[in-house]
Image (cartoon, rainbow, N blue to C red; front, side, top):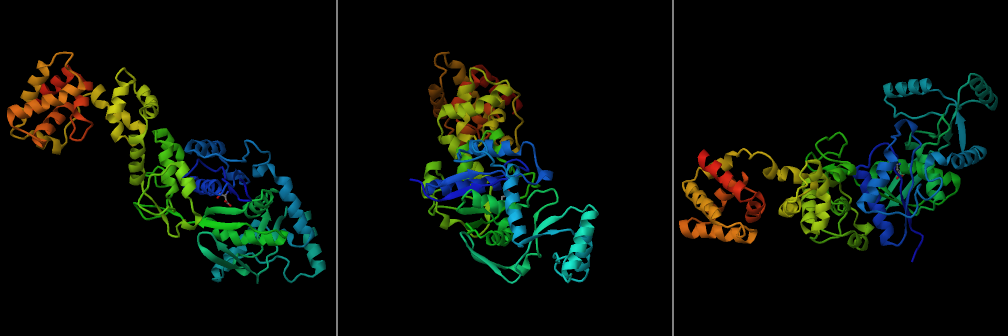
Length: 484
Ligand code: GLU
């Protein structure tokens, strides 16, 4: 059953899909799907200077990768990019000009700059002061004629009602209000290049596309009164607004910034590293929202069912890479083998490691993978030199009983026939060493593990030995014995 709920994600294609934008898209998506409404994508490309060629592709491709779908977008609908809608904006700008609710402004950049500097020096809040202030009708006409003759191209400004109060009940933040006099004076709705400004175009589009709820980041709160002014001037009813709190970096406590190069922030990065999209989707859904309770792992369908806009958080959402990695590992651990193998395959192929053992190796390391690209360093043992030991590992190997354990286990491996050398038969051999030597637990398993794999924490031991092969395992143990 459909209804009147229509929400939109309206990216400006000024860069790749960032985690913050992905969250905006995702909450709009969840809201629409939960309420059987519609989810729309519109491209806000009026800022030609900041336009990035690949921006739109990255947005759509990565949203799709995350598992979102939409009902309307530039792919299926005409004029869903702002640059294709100039006529429509023009129509309403003309209407406002005709009604005297907007006017052409001939003030130059230099004049505006000089005025701004004067205001700053005088300790005044910078604002545009109406250039026609105090002019008679005749003086006004002469000023316009003179400026037009000088070739000055006007902008169009909205005549702001300075005493009006603009308020709304925000879906996230509750009641918010701004005074008309506090937004910096009559503001530009059409730039010199004929393009509308964002705050004007967004209103025309949201009205034209019958958007019922505008859910976006709280960096847009200060834009909302300007947008409400346009709704008022054009005689339209404004949609509901919801402004989500910002995302902070859990390490620094500061706003997540594209300059934090230590944090992966673009969805493309996660995709390239071989994260499972379901895990990233789940993680983003919990940035500033939670369904209550202790559980954190939810499928897309569960999130759609559980989504409740009343639970959108009022406090900043912490982006915690460790949590994402924990979640990602949980998804990979529990995913079907074929899915994980497919995810690892390109990385193994690129490293020249797509051998007949590849499937077994993926199976071996699946429980500890966070992202598929890790399969390459993890499988180094099988393809490159024996790793250097850490101090902690060296300390274990200095243990008194280590040579006894290694000698005994080596003898067991040597005594196994080719047919016997199977994963299931290797563990009993370790147990036999225990029986023979009386050495057990850590003192038994650790030296064998380190001698064979060079690591204290690795995948399951019998399988590692099996995949390494008997000869290689014996060789590693021999080398270790010699180095003791
Ligand atoms: N194009 C705006 C942005 O990328 C969207 C603003 C809005 O949702 O109204 O921030």
